Image (tube, rainbow, N blue to C red):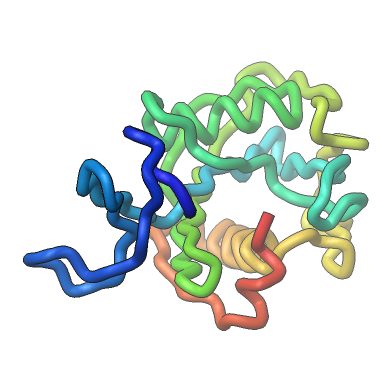
Length: 184
């Protein structure tokens, strides 16, 4: 950051009074510009026991399979963000969203949240950010072609939990090398 988005004056990094971290502070109006992690919300959509995956049409990891997810927008809840991303990427309306996976990715300043969800009516279609959208049985999952470690871990947990029908909300960190692959 070089300039204040409030007055246009140059900013510098310093620790503001009463704070303990370097922040961008405006030399003109003294506004403090906080930088916080980005939230990525998505769904693990299921229809008749199969999981809906999207083949990415955008970088990073173009051509690889993923669960529909993306950055949360201002003015929406986590569940709304996850449902919106699923509709945008997979043309799939979802229902019965239940928080399932939470990944802390401090190395890339992101938090990922996945909801378990049911397709509302079984419909799905290719969205602008997808090359292909398809339902997969567990044995058909293209494990070596998954875009991000968060997606692989979410699917691993889901299939293991499905055997017992117990779906706890999980919170897991990912190692820096694995987390680097999740950076959009």
